[in-house]
Length: 296
Image 1 (tube, rainbow, N blue to C red):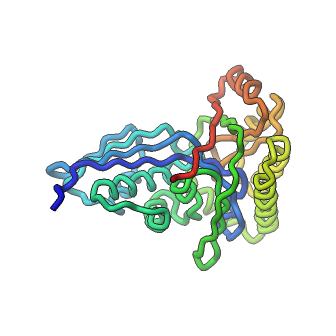
Image 2 (tube, rainbow, N blue to C red):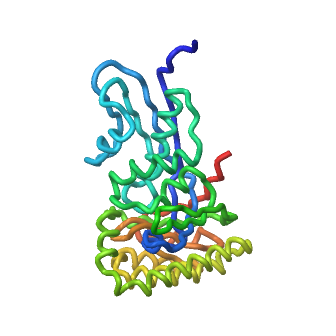
Image 3 (cartoon, rainbow, N blue to C red):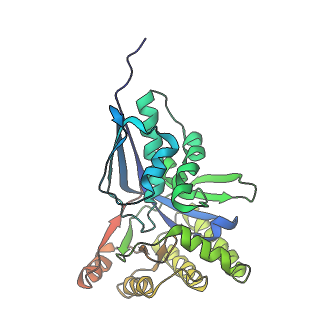
């Protein structure tokens, strides 16, 4: 009989949504890519009450741990390179990394289906009614087409990822995904046409990726998606200013990424350098974000 494992480890990448925010909650397609910034979690068996070692400051974190961990006998250490509340899937990466760490601790491998199924319970602590997209792309890596029907059934398939990095510009302000999703829901059915149009942009992005298109083809689609996100009321003046900055610096297109109300903007450009330089000159934190490869 093998000895009881005393430690477990799990990690998962964050994500960026290329198209489909909010519309995906209501049954439309979305497209997302995993990014090469990650959350790592270590679990260690200890005596006494559960201990948390993390720089994260979120009152919901212990509630999320309660979903799959006991309140006694384990130390949880969390390290993340993802900005929290910025639309980069920090809670989805946390959910997947936590599930993988628990699986490693108990010596039972966990597959994508189990990560996606069990990740919903953790994500609900943070977002109330998540679509499942965030933790799906964190669990699978690469680029992903995703749709969740009204019955909860999920359709997803891998896509060819962009062969060039996206540029991420951080507004420095956190958004509240649950509140933004609730706000969009409260504005229906008046905005249903815009949500349907966002779904159509997603379909065009899927076709562009399947054709191996570059940033010049993808950029105008990002611009369309951002205009529609403005229509449904989830952008902010700060996000709009970052979109304008990126476009004026030569980006083929840019949009907010995530639920809005704060967070990051993504830009598609053949050469990230001019956008990064413009962001630096404006005092904006920005970086190039390569796509994380699909999981083996």
